[in-house]
Image 1: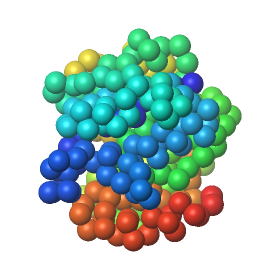
Image 2: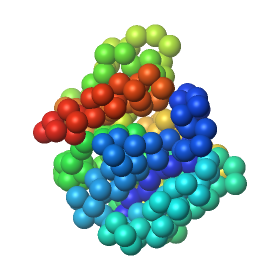
Image 3: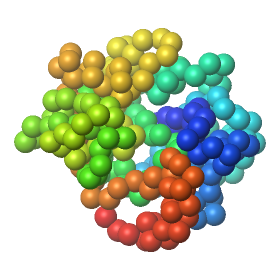
Image 4: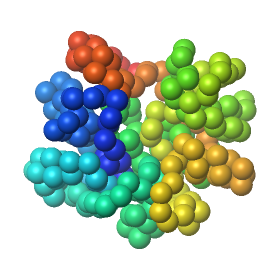
Length: 238
């Protein structure tokens, strides 16, 4: 299998922290966030990694190189202009066309077993699986509504009002390669464009519920809090 790590964003809400370093390269437990995600992939046996780049791209490539030092093979795509989360994946369509693949937001800290996601995806015969966790305040997240079998019926990105669902998008997807044909070239985003379109076209989009949250670092205050709780986060077993 293969995985796409999305690493092109600027992390603007972190202010001065990301002035000289891209958000995926911020350190948690002494190593960059993107490195934790590569290790999560390796733990499931994924060694073919694809990474899209834009903001301060050389910081990432100088650290990771071709991936050989870390036991993986890395292919990069440098975006002259940001293509969005789905547009960044579309750039790798030729390389991803043969088998299901993971998409992982490389600037987010996870502690998940991708094997659980793969198993659920296959049992449901899903076209796309979205990893979810429960969150009290959903206003800054992508919120999903599901039936009793975890088939996703609706997806609302950053709702303005409280909703009758607390299951939110983690930023990890497992996708069948046929879906690549439905992603247009150019800028497009999974949360605002592609996932709602998949649901409308009756694709089998399922949620995979996880017990643990992600470790948020979207602002300087959240990053400071993450550094204070990082050991506890990674020592939990789920």
